[in-house]
Length: 168
Image (cartoon, rainbow, N blue to C red; front, top):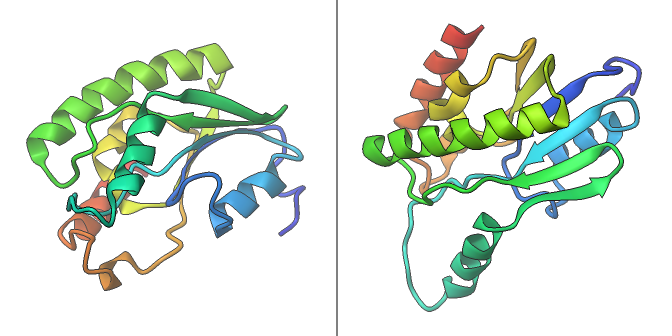
């Protein structure tokens, strides 16, 4: 990847994973941060909630992240843990989350002076939230074939693609 392709942009990246996971989007954002400012939004999640003793530590860590806000990784990378209701695939909760995220992003983008930014979408779970943004350019970069996972609501994949097309 040539670091000169994108230069002097602000990039809001909705990642498919947490920043600490060494996936493609994190590597790409680290590389692009040489010439651009990055706001990496930690994954909102893909799985439907199933609570049991085996995954209690995972949910505790996610809950803790909900209250951690932003973290400066470097001079050009900020990681954001948005506060939202951690329930996916529910139209009523989506409406509440849209309101919560709208408020957080308006404030954060203003504070960071991200006026003319690129939006990098890496996961279909951000479909309900695309309307919150008015990017200069929208990049959809799914790093997985989400329809192959049993824990992803397949109905959201076409919804995301339809919302994505409408946003372009």
